[in-house]
Length: 138
Image 1 (cartoon, rainbow, N blue to C red):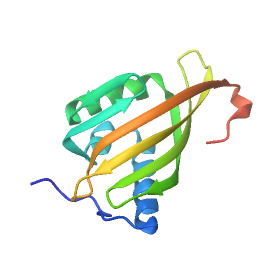
Image 2 (cartoon, helix red, strand yellow):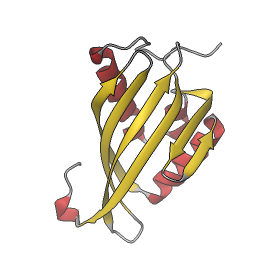
Image 3 (cartoon, helix red, strand yellow):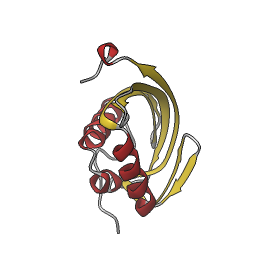
């Protein structure tokens, strides 16, 4: 049996917002193994044009992501929820190895099991080149 990850479904607006804040905090640590533990062992992702299944693939994906997206900083916002699902709007900023800054915008749809672990994550993301002085997140 997998561990529980509160808050648990069914979600209220208050617990959905708390779940979003905890996800934001975890992703901003850039600790791939810790982040992956919030997902079911067989979690399914669509991230841009990549399809990922399971924690091992999630960890590899996140390590690769954060090796390329330097000084990554994320902000997530509540959009909507149902009993086991949460919709999120987000933006994050990072720079590449050449010093070019980007702001990425997108939406995520999340589905959770009864233990509060995310079993599905579908992300649509667009990147925008920005100058360092245009950064909003730090």
